[in-house]
Amino acid sequence: MTMKALVYTGTQEVHYRDEKKPVAGPNQALIEVAATAICGSDMHAYHGLDERRVPPLILGHEVAGKVVTSSRHETGQHVVINPLMTCGHCAPCLSGRANLCSDREIIGMRLAGAYAQYLVIDETNLLVPPANVKPWVACLTEPTATALHAVALVERVSYRPLSEQRCLVIGGGAVGLLTALILSAKGCCNIDLAETNALRRNTIDQQNIVTVFDPSTQTAPSASGYDVVFDCVGAGVTRAMASEQVAAGGIISHVGLQNSHEGLDIRRITLQEITVLGNYCYTPADMQAALDMLCSDRLGDLRWVELRPLSEGAQAFSDLHYGRAAAAKIVLQPDHHL
Image (tube, rainbow, N blue to C red; front, side, top):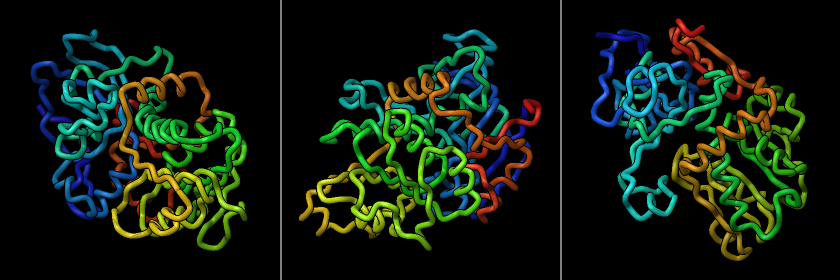
């Protein structure tokens, strides 16, 4: 049997075509996909910059759907997928930090992802959302968990509550905006956000929680620097900006990872006791907390999300590549779900 899927076939090439429908193995569930959001890491692969994602490959890991077959869940049960599969028995897994598992695997990297009508996933990687939550909202659990994990790591090492600190978020994609929304929900009222795309700046400005500026033409609003800087892009230029803007004794949270070269001012980091935190994905607890946060409307009305049919996925990738999309997040839905 076949299904429709959006397949990454080469640099800046994705094609909507027929693919073999997956079959669930032991301890796996077959999921009918209802909504999958485009992630920055998918764009990184689209640009031909991720050697781990080898075409042809079905990308996509921010996903919600419903159960077709499973030994643990009823057929038709709506679910959110934790795309990060781990061994469950190593020291990080047993300590609640499964995101650091040495045997971890995420769908849409070497395994087929979620830009398709169906996918298979380990049954232990399913979360059940409230019945009234729409799939396009539920699929935002994964990027929300990424942002929540970054904020939680900062809270763990910070000397003062976030509500008392000046925060800079670099990057106005979904993870950057979600980071700002989570900071605001935690009582932080001094948040600036750097974004070069004018369309996105307008979308972010409508949230009324941050001062948004263009770092290519404007200086950062805080003349005295920031207690915490979240780099949600992870490029050399944004690491350099983080190193410049963080205050003495402050924290840089490195969330995005476009590349791993240059940018950090190690001399300043050393002499001014700046803490640099790495972030990788999220824990299972972060996923559940993110789902709870989305379902409680603590992150606002989500007007910054745009829905498109999966069959038009190639256009969505192109629009993101050329900066034509105002939305911080584009969600693709199989055409029969529209």
